Length: 264
Image (tube, rainbow, N blue to C red; front, side, top):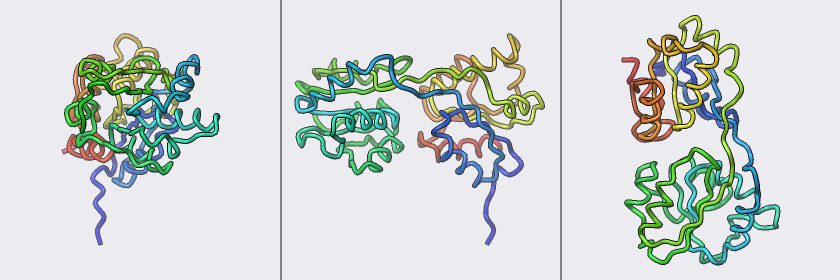
């Protein structure tokens, strides 16, 4: 049986946070790619836990808990466990919504089945397909401290929801690129760079400027830039002046497929 390896002899750079790279690496290596890491995000706690802890202590008074990332799931679960609770043992009146397959899987891994996952893995789809009217609902949105989109909270607020946004984690730019990835870029060995969020595109541009100076775009002029979704594509166009392929669906498998398409 012949195994298809459409990325054989191709070098692909992955820009996910360090702790989230293993799944993407395995997927791309299965397709034959040489994978290099460029972790463009460092995930850590917010500046203060107070607002999140206060909200979690008041879960009985919320109707919906809305997660837009697996990081939000991870940090909320950690904080709940500190007070002897878990998402699996949440109040029965509290429903959970998750944007994206990865976020839903993170919930399932801790034995939580989300009550609603939108058909498309983007925030706008959650708003469009939300199963009930938001009017009068008290909704909790754990999110990244800085740099994330506020479209969800704003849209549900306009629809009459009583929205509470709290910082559950922070994502920052690392200090520098890994040496092997830097050398591959210098040697013009990189075929594609994949971006899994708007912030990974922003931070990669910062790291490239820091390492290669004002003419850093020349370093990627022959490199395919692959985006996971619409907002990531906007960030790519802003910082790299282009995007070569966008994933559909907006998940890791879609990203891999888009990378294959870009090589044809």
